[in-house]
Length: 156
Image (cartoon, rainbow, N blue to C red; front, side, top):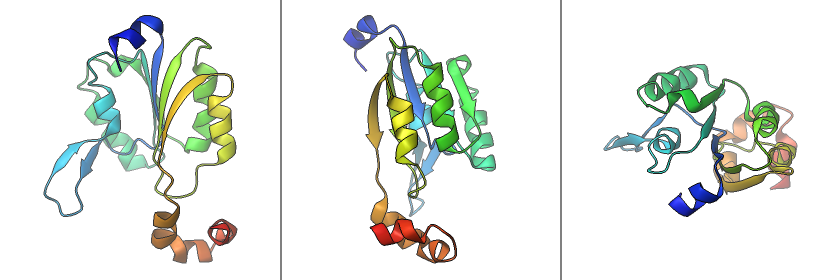
């Protein structure tokens, strides 16, 4: 984020809909580094608000513990729930004059397009969105075959 943006938008919001535990480890175990929520707390020009969503109980606890050391901790709104239900709550908290950056990085196809529509409706929200379509199918095909989510897989 640049200083020019900070002068134009006093209310700058960071949204992480799949925040995770706050730390990432490379698959070979060779390195560990801050994940996106902790990186957002360290930006040179700070966001005025942060919204962290994580439905995993252990991941949520780990993220909250790791974020406590940040001086920006008071600016965080916490959502220990599904990103689909949190999207409407976050959207309703955004000022019409705010500029938001939303990171949407699900591990599967469980974030609904209607939730995305709700989040951005009548608000300035820039998106960074990972679509894990092939990755999700490879990871979760057996689970989908046992549930009513088979139709999602078949549409791919």
